[in-house]
Amino acid sequence: MARPPTGPTLVDRLPGSDEAKHRTCIILETITGARSIEQAAQALDCNRSYVHVLRDQILTAAIQGAEARTPGPKPQPPSPEEAQAAVAAADRRALDAKVALELEQCRTELALVLGPRIGNAPKKKHRRR
Image (cartoon, rainbow, N blue to C red; front, side, top):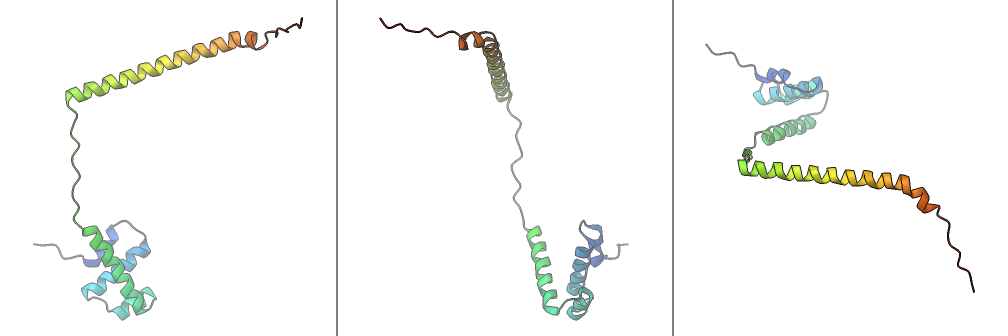
């Protein structure tokens, strides 16, 4: 035995505000013939032309949602050689970063130790003969 059709009440199970669900349900009722445009306008507290505009907007959104989409390619796992090359490149970058950090630490230490001596060295005055 088949289930009875639920019709516009399917909207209640979907995400969205209560106001949007109410409007959609009323528009669907106009499409199924359960409600006239005049009745829908009264239920939505608007004029008949707005019911037509709202119906067109809802149907346009439904059609856009039903457009066929081409599936994207599935990502292929890298080959073992590619994976090894990627790991080796990452190791090289990590080693380069470590060396750069050690160099910067050495420069900082030298600047702290020698900087004041170099910067404050007395200037030699040239004597005129």
